[in-house]
Amino acid sequence: MEKTLSGRRPKNPGAGAVRHCVGGPAGKTRGPAFTPARLIAALRAGLPYAELEELQARLQTPLDQLLPRLDISKATLHRRKAAGRLEPAESDRVLRFARLLGRAVTVMESEDQARRWLNAPQTGLGGAVPLDYADSEVGAREVEDLLGRIEYGVYS
Image (tube, rainbow, N blue to C red; front, side, top):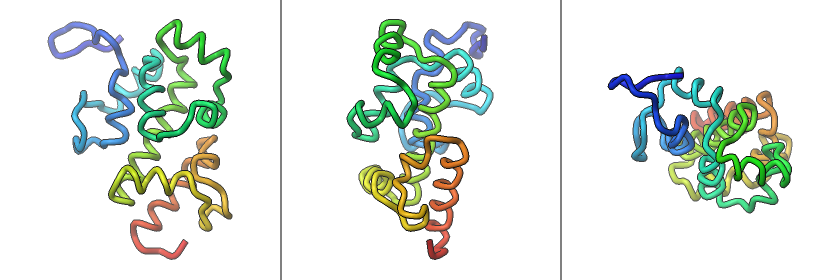
């Protein structure tokens, strides 16, 4: 387990990871700094359940729409809520969506515009909705690619 500079273990590893991914390493939002190594350690430990709630709040998406995108059943959700922690694979999917939201915020210049873009069909994805397309790592990379093309003014 990772230790802080003081030699102590973090009280809740992964807390603030979604905020970091949406706000970016440049620190547009306040929260703990996450190095890639710290993010990986947090994913391996499983993110706190509150990170899923943070993602839902940031995306402003009802749970019944978000859970299938994250491949989490309602029964599993209740178990994770009771345990207070997500499994590593679930944590990875939560951070995948948080990173996409963060990238979209950078390109669209506001969280509100980013949310709208992520939830609307996009021609550059063959008419698919980015959040639906991002249910796999390959799909998420395609969404990131499209955001990069938009950022640099390449017709998509």
